[in-house]
Image (cartoon, rainbow, N blue to C red; front, side, top):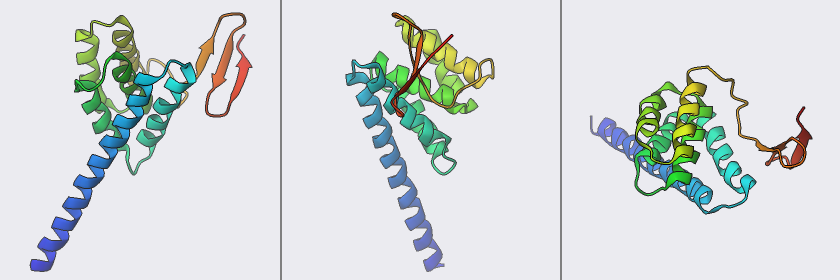
Length: 155
C-alpha cells in the first residue's frame, strides 16, 4: 500500500509540474505575439502552439493552458487573439465556451472577430489548413509560409 501511495504521489507531482511547464511555454509564446510587429513574428509562435495542441501527447494540456490565457489579465488583445487563433486551428470543442465569452465581451473588434472565426473553425464552417499563413494584398496577392520561408501568388 505504501508503494502504491508513493507511486501515485510521484505521478501526480509529475503531472502538476508538466502542466505548469506547459502553461509557462504557452505564456512565453503568447508574450512573443504581444511584442512582435512583424506578421511572421506573430504567426510563428501561434503555429508552434497549434502544432503542440495537435500533438496527442500534450493536446489536452495545451488547450487548457490556452483557455487559461484567454481568461487571464496577463495578456492584452494581441496575446488573447493568438490564443484564440491557436484554439480555433486545434479544433477542440472544449474551447468553445471560452471563445464565446471572448466573442461576447471583447471590446476590441479584431479579438472579437478572431474569437468568432475560431468558433466557426471548431464548428466545421471553415476548413483549417493546420497552421496560419500570412496573406499580403499590397501589390499582388501572396500567401507566405513563415516557417518554410516561401511565398506563392494567390489567384
